[in-house]
Image (cartoon, rainbow over all chains, first blue to last red):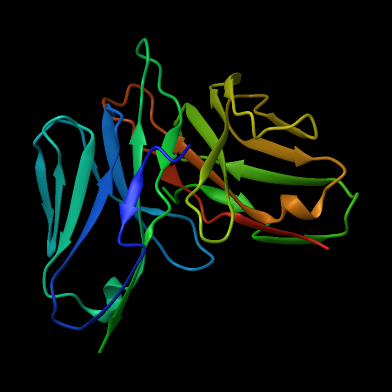
Length: 114
Length: 115
């Protein structure tokens, strides 16, 4: 069962364009992380969002956690070729205060052409 | 701090052989996780340690897979009698003690190819 749906799966844009990637679920998450992954490498953490409605900015990247903590979005302004990569969202569902596994979406493969 | 490290980065083996991977977490991170990632998919959870205790195992972790973290520091993941379906990227992640969020930091992965 795929608990986290990411869209779009693939995105090819020109340098300077804006884009939004979505991460949706019917489940509630205690927190959600966004990672970027290059081919042959492990995911690199971009941000963690914890509070419903939270918005975090990281330079040209803006992350939002839905009010109900079921969905999230990543918006990139003025994309650059260096933004190319696989963007993964991952949600955590904790029970009884323990810290368990992350549930990942399939990812959005972004290509930014010069 | 150098981050999570994994060894080897690449492993090619023949079907039926045993392989072992090592993960060194970020210093003083008491939580350690193993994931598996196949082409076109996001990482899938395999197992999780808090210190030396293995607290959770996925159904993906068949009886051919075993993981240890004997002293609560580094961890090993062993696959016995490898099958072609075991070909994947094996990722290790760690998380600090007492973290408010569930943030996990990943290593570079071990790419396994079973011929």
